[in-house]
Image (cartoon, rainbow, N blue to C red; front, side):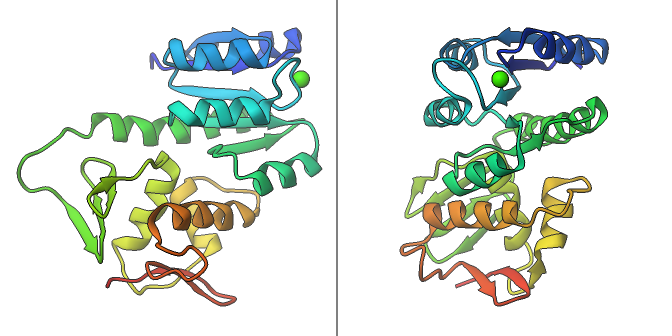
Length: 233
Ligand code: CA
């Protein structure tokens, strides 16, 4: 695998260990030790995935995440030192694809990197086709499965890979209600340690992107105390 991982972490020994671990697994790595350099490298060096520490000198990881998201949908895993930071990340809706709390095992981090890369590879290899385009249409929303593209009112929606995967999962089975657990398992792709907020946050972001009024959704519906479903209009 020749995927490149950008590691943005100011503690040099941690950065070194992560680089060593991933290079041993066959990845290329890039290292940045502050937020501003990290954002710059994320945008210029075209990494396949970004590992982003929260506490960084200069620009912190949360702002760095927002900056990267303005221009790029590269998968981002936030590295957090404390549980309460997770609440902050989730609450701020930064657009990170995943987060992991220190201390984490190299094996767990590696599994998450692999899961995200697998999805982005599928996305990258999706060839534009002129026929047999696999689309799901509901109201003014068109989901193009082959192109990993969503259009709202004819306009392409800026959507992250994870948001797309979630929307696709719901939309291919309209009206079928999925619990958060099922969505985590199928969309996030590994045994997630029970943080259902991740699903809720991603649903909220999706609604902001495809609903006319996110507080009165017509496409991505909530079934109270059960889960979510896609409504085909
Ligand atoms: Ca740090």
